[in-house]
Image (tube, rainbow, N blue to C red; front, top):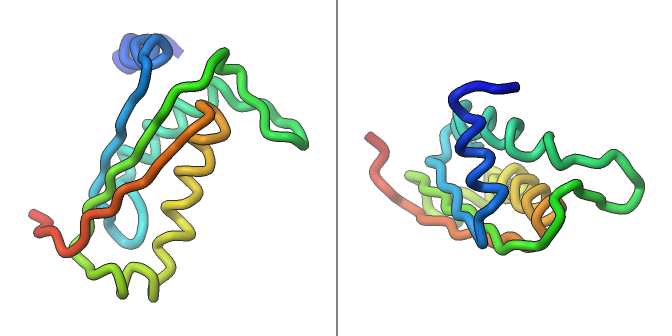
Length: 108
């Protein structure tokens, strides 16, 4: 697909690292971030038993999440299950991923 996002994806492919961020609504990232992740990750996805990627090197990646709940509520409602999926896919495609959660942030 060649659209307005194509140049961004090309720059990410040349980056030494990248950081993504999203507020958490209803226990997961925004719809826009979800769509972006699909475009970013699918191009490198290899369907195989052992994790595979078409991305030719390893780069560190990270995700910062903001949410207007406490850490206890996040765990109670199992947000880590959904957020961990994003980290797992970033690690699978790019070799390394970390997550930082910011709790009790004001959502406007």
